[in-house]
Image 1 (cartoon, rainbow, N blue to C red):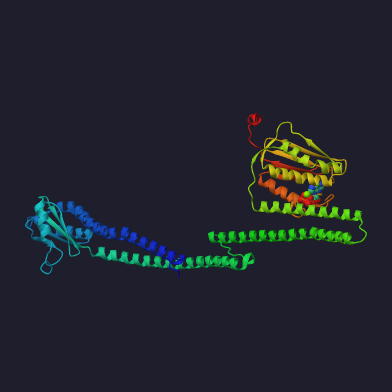
Image 2 (cartoon, rainbow, N blue to C red):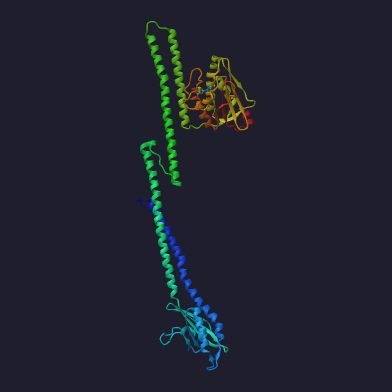
Length: 479
Ligand SMILES: Nc1ncnc2c1ncn2[C@@H]1O[C@H](COP(=O)(O)OP(=O)(O)O)[C@@H](O)[C@H]1O
Ligand SMILES: [Mg+2]
């Protein structure tokens, strides 16, 4: 057991809580109980004395002795004994015993002090002596209201015996409760700690064996179960990411190898041509063109891979006011030459008013380039490509529409994945990275890159949606 591990701490807390509960309960219950039992006993005696007062007053005079009737006095004393539960002795005002239930010669009376006090003060006097309550009460007897003192002696032993009974019961109950709490505590901490240990082992396993280690399995419906499930989910997610990363690296190196190999082959052939006696210039020129095309593709791939790795490294994109009509014109101008080569016209539809989006200018230009590049590749000769910026209440939109064959329905999602090319690739292919990069960039700017429904028309429409910029138009006009 570790000195400050969870188990000793839980135990200490459990024992402390139980002990404090018991002590507080004992203090709150047991000590007032004894006091209470004692005052109750006392009060019962006083009540009994008060209630017999009228009966003493009604005792008649015995004509034979001219004193209060002894038999009636006895009768009242017996009633008092029954009510108070104590021994009753009646004394006259000279403190001579008139009636006693016990033989006073055997039982040395110990109540004279109280009796005297009662007689002198005309008030009830009481004392606790030797575990007994002695209460002396002045009493008027008979029609002549003669002064007597009635003494009741009641043992209060039952108080301490009741108290001890309760105390014993309390100790037994407390002991049982304490034991049960301890057993429950042991059971609970053992299972909890075992589950935590399993979780710890799973973590260590992960550390040693990597992501393929078995994930922790805990079906508990409590916090530890949740922790284990979160842990397993995290591991699954990490494994998925790791698999994707490996696949990406593998595909990327494969994609790099193919054009490199063909570049290498072409250069070799060119070298042979140069070494041969009769150099076929036409042939050599064609090989050089093809080699240059391969190297262009390679540098394209390199820049795509760089883009992707930047995106994966979560490089911050800028967020600044950007006029979409302006950026359309700028990027379209870059394509003037290749569009002319293909006899395709890029038709820029200017927005009715400046269309400000909050975005990263470099990223938006990159996306427009990706879309225009694709559109140019699939668009038939003598067709046109529409490039349009538009705005509504919530969004700024940039749409690129071509007159090519469009995207088959079953490829609409797949073409946005990395290294995935569709069936329509047009002349001179890329590596299936353009749309993946575009979508990632758009998402990172809180926008979206979507393939719009062409609604039966020929061609494909891709749309870049961006959040609007809060610009003060006057301010910009002043600049
Ligand atoms: N304008 C378009 N018309 C038809 N299909 C397109 C268009 N743009 C993209 N695609 C499809 O999406 C695929 C993925 O595009 P992209 O990610 O740019 O990769 P790449 O251009 O290297 O093929 C393309 O291979 C093509 O099949
Ligand atoms: Mg492309």
